[in-house]
Amino acid sequence: MLKDTALILTNGRLDTADAKTAHGLIRGTDRFSIVAVIDPVECGKDAGEIVDGCCRNIPVFESIRTFLDHSQQKPDYGIIGVALSGGRLPEAWNNILLDVLENRINLISTMHQLLSEKPVLRDAARKNGVEIIDLRKPKPTDQLHFWSGEIYNVRAPKIAVLGMDCAIGKRTTARFITEMCRQESIRTEMIYTGQTGWLQGYKHGFIFDATLNDFVSGELEHAVLECDRQSSPQLILIEGQSGLRNPSGPCGAEIIVSANVKGVILQHAPFRKYFEDLEHLHCLLPDVKDEIELIRMYGAQTLAVTLNGEGGSREELDAYRKELAQRLQLPVVCPLHEGTDGLLPVIRRFIAQQHQ
Image 1 (cartoon, helix red, strand yellow):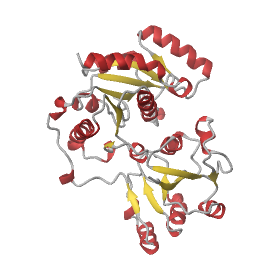
Image 2 (tube, rainbow, N blue to C red):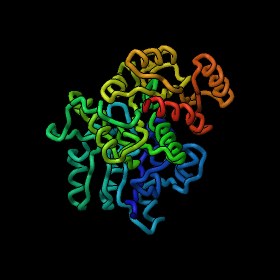
Image 3 (cartoon, one colour):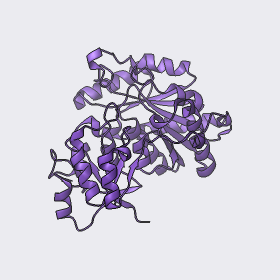
Image 4 (cartoon, rainbow, N blue to C red):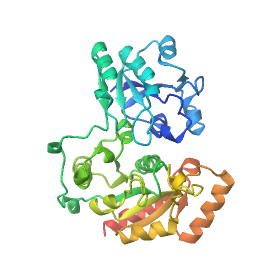
């Protein structure tokens, strides 16, 4: 089946952590065929080389116009590829969004701000016969599920990929683990909990931060139940959000408790001192060993730690990995540098234990 084609819009932020949605789509998506990135700062390069040094034949163009002048095919969608604090786009984005709509390209927004309700964009979409899709538009309450306890009937073992903080690589690690397990003939499904997971084409999940708080546990349970019943996996991975103790949005306890998770893989950024975007408040990240103890108190076992090496050299990361593995007596791997094959034995052991 042919995939819809899409441009990714980063508007000067492609080489920043704000573009984590773009980075995920550049690394891979089963829902769209990514034809280009629009970013005036990085134009002329290959997007994959910017993200992780791998050429993926996804060119970066300065503008919609330069892309259309170069391409023989108009894409189906333009996808906003950034996630900004507060979920609002600066007014400076209006021009690029209008360019998308006026060239009769549908727009997919990943913002909390509902762009389909912004008059200048709404009018442009109507005039040109295209659609603005707000992925984070909350569902009506009659479409939401309340927690029922049916989660205790799920047959497949569940592992949550949680993180010490937000924007730390949880979804990317979960995707790597999913692909590795499938290659090893372990039927594995990933529950997405953010907009990027939906954009990448995962079948089961919900968008955590677009869900009314009373229904978060129920939507999580429903996604896992649906996955278990429809896909019959041998393993379910659940993508984490934020961090257990991030004061701007603590998250993770619901995933462990409401999804009845017994195994956790914890993503850590050892060279990050403060919680993301809270540096000015000196909000220190907790010690990873303390986080593992907190996870244990919630009723789950930390199976391994995965590392994001941002802010440090490869040599510093390797040294830290060895020291942490010795201190914790757990597997510690760096997914972007070495893949996730080192997690396979502990995952196989966990699956076997859950069936005893």
